[in-house]
Length: 96
Image (cartoon, rainbow, N blue to C red; front, side, top):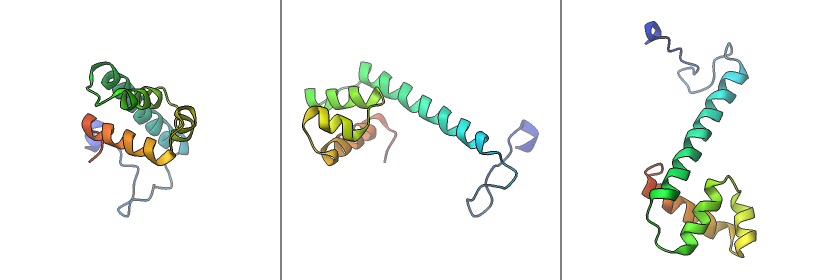
């Protein structure tokens, strides 16, 4: 895979190699977040929700609002929001 330009940034034990710049990791994480929220917005527009609450929670989550702020805004617990988001992530296929 090195011939294709791929360079592994992890050691065998899963730790990052010393010669990897922290910005490389930051860019990879940023790209993954952008892709996740793009998929979340897509599911918001095309997915099936069991009820209005699930839709509202997912809409706020897809906008990048934290679980705590969603809970505060909707008058629910952090854990209710977390369970709802995880349930929808499973429907989306991004969580097992």
